[in-house]
Length: 264
Image (cartoon, rainbow, N blue to C red; front, side):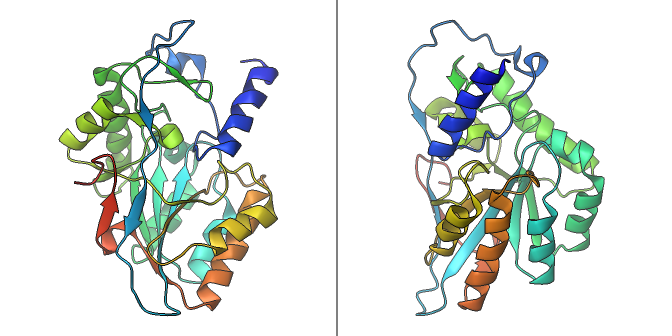
């Protein structure tokens, strides 16, 4: 893909709450036949909240991080471990393949990290051919199933317990794909605070966004872009929130409420 198209896709991802920080290769998107003029379909970007603590000065927040492709961001990972901050990490098969050292840290700290499914090749879990931020969707129910099941298989092969949460590339879905993923036994992880704009925001705005999280919020950020400024802001915000008495929880630690029938 030429640089102009890639830059356009990244700009859209920063404006929206996308998690499409890197594009799959042409070979990986070939399974989805995307017409020149993609049909208009209804896409949703589900919200997710967790049960509030309802204790003044003791907000309960779920931190979630996508590990799409690329390398581990040690600024974030080291802060989570040093400060003993729990988080839910959504990993792709592609990321696992190239980050054995970070995976080892996750597995060595089961009290901190809940590892969940971000798919096999970071392809949007939409069962109709379309483009989302320049990325071709899975394009069929069979391809959605492969994206979900391929990600889970790679996790189990890496020594991770079988996942039961799924978050697709771009965090967008069509309603029929949501039904298909739920029928596979997964809860679908939306969010309520977009922390880093697909890892493309600056450090200061990222820190401000995450530090503004309130009781019951689910924050989405990225842990796979060590060269992006956003990671610095994420790390600072985590320390800020902890200093305020925030209770950090993983998605499996508390009750949750997702819209668009993502968790019902």
